[in-house]
Image (cartoon, rainbow, N blue to C red; front, side):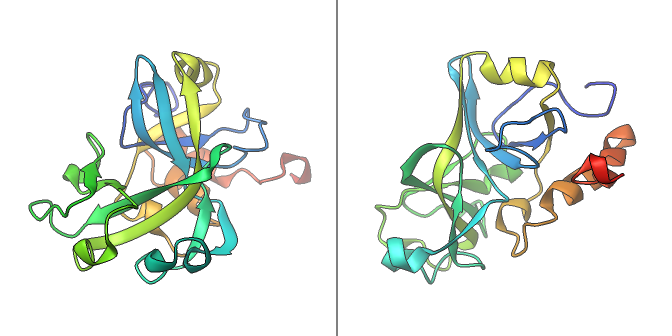
Length: 195
């Protein structure tokens, strides 16, 4: 745990919340759900970058299954020609074909869905589904270095975070619910020069 209340260890199922020090345009004011993290690197998806592209235009059979808004989200700058589907199970004891839980996330209910799975095999078993074009990726020790230099806050995920209808205030809302001084950061203006 850092002085500001953020955790310092990035693990699957945690959120990375961009700090004001992060100036990479791909990640300014972003909230990233970590899907995998180990000694070889880390992978996640940006939760608050909706596109204007309806899922049904790209993955026709999935258009009616995704959470509102029914658009693709920009998951990150890597592999933008591919897609990842993040889902939340209704019942952790009823795991459909094609679902793989993210270790340590939301009691095993949060995970990935294989988009090659026939939609009818998962319909009715999910509380939420969102599809991301691309992902955020870090090489071995790269993410740890970015956390150490103060580019990311590492905080717990709540089940609704990846599936919010309006993601515009996700960054602020995630920080606001954190303990101690970390919550104070939620009140900073998006453009500090306007302060």
